[in-house]
Image 1: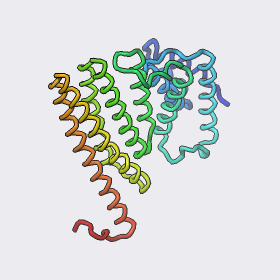
Image 2: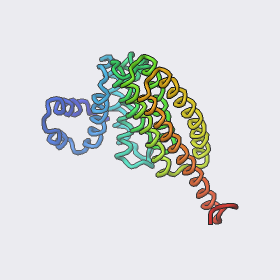
Image 3: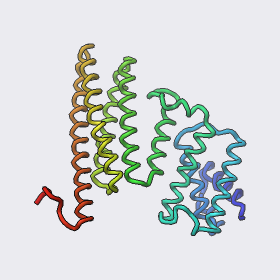
Image 4: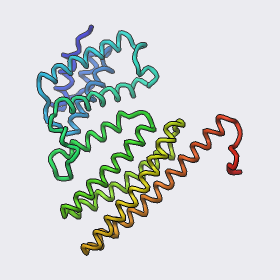
Length: 273
């Protein structure tokens, strides 16, 4: 098994000192791809702004990562990601390792789910969300994550309104609106199997009812407290979100109809002419 610890340390030092990384990589042409994958892990962690993990854990994680890299080189045909293009495999591996390191090495991250804008762990919370989306290759699972993170933004906005932080809350309402729109675009552009279509359709219908009730109640509460400006923004968001979720429902129905046509070679009864 080839030990990559020294070239990895050289690469990390080059990144830290802002020296020419390509010069280091050229010294190890046979290991270039593996080293790049490992460096992505370090970049992912840095982007999250996570505090340093326990040194012993970091050593064990690094050694395990090196071992896995060597095993993949020796038996690539046995990789469970054999059907994925190699660059995508490396990105998924690095991202998954990043999430694992944060979860295991940063104990404070366990409490980050309840953090709000301005809290020390909120940046870490958003970083983990981005990493989860980045390593989720399945289109249905990615769409579900997008919808879940949109729900998180709405819940955060409601808490901020309750704390009197109206400006921050309005910003999160706008983010919620944008993330629901992103989910809608993802649904329109992706292909799903029958099981995923059923589950996504259920989630969309559920979100329609919940979003309508939550935003309507929030707008009413803001109006009752004399904050008509924020209430108008929430009401506008309610209209946008309802339209986006209706469009997603229509797109999912179209995907299902197209799937039936592909399976039977004919248009379903009652289909459009």
